[in-house]
Amino acid sequence: MILLKLLWRIKLQIQAVRGFRDVLPGEVALWHKVEEIARSVLERYGFREIRIPILEKTELFSRSIGESTDIVEKEMYTFTDRSGISLTMRPEATAGILRAYIEHSLFQLEPVSKLYCIGPMFRHERPQKGRYRQFHQINAEVLGSSDPRTDAELLALLRTLFEELGLGELDFQLNSLGCPRCRPGFRSKVAEYLGSKKAHLCSDCQRRLMTNPLRVYDCKVATCKEALAGAPVILDELCQECGAHFLSVQKNLSLLGVPFSVNPFIVRGLDYYRRTTFEVVSSDLGAQNAVCGGGRYDGLIGELGGPDLPGIGFAIGEERLVSILQGRAGVPSFSLDLFLAALGEEATEKAFFYLDKARRLGLKAEMDLRGGSLKAQMRRANKLGSRRLLILGEDELSRGVATVKDMDGGTQVEIPLEELESAMAGWKEACSQRG
Ligand code: HAM
Image (cartoon, rainbow, N blue to C red; front, side, top):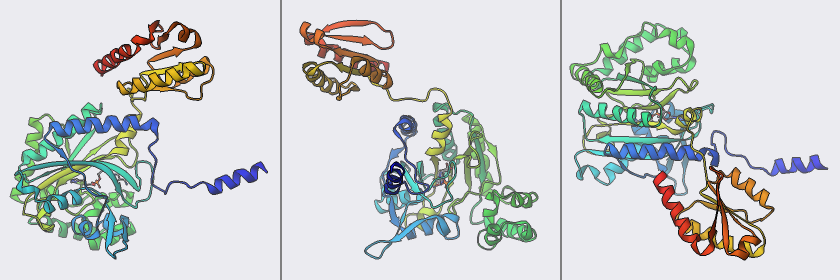
């Protein structure tokens, strides 16, 4: 019978969609910390937040990310809505930000726009640790500047952000993908070289050979990696302008003291990149080791119907960032300023009144409305990590006082009830000063 009931319950239970994960309350404090520091650093570097829709017309992504990319070919959540329009849940934010930038003529407001957005993205990839079908990105774009100092400034921002998160050791890898002048020559050389190694390539890369040979550089399959051992390198093929741009980016990174290494195999999985591309990699993550990816996409704003303005940006994967930070000291946890324990009906009513007062004064306060013994209520206060415990028993009530215990220091004082509100205001003041 019990077994039957259990099976019935399991049958009734609905689980999350594969690759879509819940961020439970125990983890949320870390997400808040990451986003708070990210917003603070982004705004210090001149970025302003933009909020864009999750749904966009499918064509926006196929035109910007590229028809022959993995994302557009096989990873998008695309459906036809009730009006017969093909819509896609954003697999990344750059295309949507550019669409909004063009649609609202933001380029008329200022010569260079710095925009950021934080939120969920959707890709139907094979889920594994660090790779989900719904994941979150912190995304930043600089629109309107082709100056190599902008590239360096963006990487310096990332350095500051990771340092403030306590991740000073991340590896910044840099490359240039050239421009429409120098890349076609490189692409033919790659196609020719890889054509001679076709038998050693995985089936995906054999197909990529026809559609997008540069994608082979990004393949994780061992035989493909081996086949690339003597492959042509884009940095040898850059035109004079792209070469000068890349050198200037490196010079400016050195000026700002941003450590980096050049990795000519960073080709990125989206087709819109030109010139500078980069990834920030962590040795703490497994196969999915890129915490951040980005690069320049001069030409894309024009291709999407806007003015011919350059652009560059990055996106940080929040799940991967949080997963590295989880292994570190100083992970923030939820804590209370005040727990109110009451014994007896009349004391409970009073405590309930002061609970609301405390919250209105700005304190994080809680009580257990189920009541229970003082011991049980104290256990709950401890579990919630409360800084103070306020006890209102029948004895306190008859004397018109509350007992307040400092949970860290263990000291205990009695406060007359008529002074309680001003005492609580003082605790709030002390909390604010402590930060
Ligand atoms: P991306 O390299 O596709 O670039 O993604 C950026 C970051 O998002 C990755 O480095 C990774 O940390 C995270 N990420 C990507 N896919 C997943 C996934 N399935 N699960 C968990 N995390 C993931 C872009 O999206 C470009 N829009 C970046 C950009 C902005 N380039 C210029 N501006």
